[in-house]
Length: 227
Image 1 (cartoon, rainbow, N blue to C red):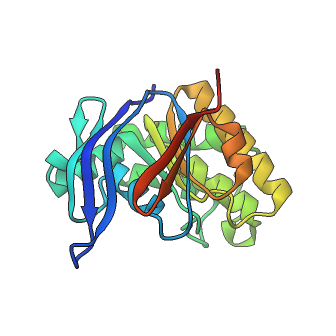
Image 2 (image 1 turned 60 degrees about the vertical axis):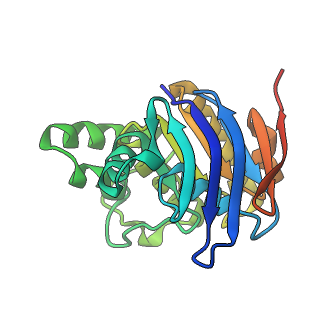
């Protein structure tokens, strides 16, 4: 199941002390599908990094369930990410010489031997659900849409409660992007996970529960798309 996000009195500053992000209060219920939009440089990626516990110079509270990320040391935040957060990047970040299943199972390399088999099983199931055959073929010859599906399977393999995606459809053609986001939202809804996707894509905004707009580091609008 997903985790609820509760943010309060959040500020993220650049090294120059300029405020990059300021959110007095934000609550996202567990199991929500949320899109974050806004102009380039508005603070969307900073918001996503902060939700993952990766932002520097952040103060306030970023609480996933009972865990306040900003109160944890760096080792504790890393452990929480491994346990609870799956990350999907715009640039895929796959190992070209590995197969789809090997890429999607990479989280097992950082887990206990007992968990490795379960992660591999879940990686294979996610690839199947996303329509990716996972034989010996390496991802070097995969299309952009196939690569992003492998990246999503990798993010889901460790069964995280939360999925954070940065522009998941930006590198894809329209038809491929539409199919991908439909499958992604359906999959996270089926498993009850919390999804936050930073995206300029109106098709992403149409398929989620809620759209948050960030402008100049602040929430400019926050609206539900579902009754």
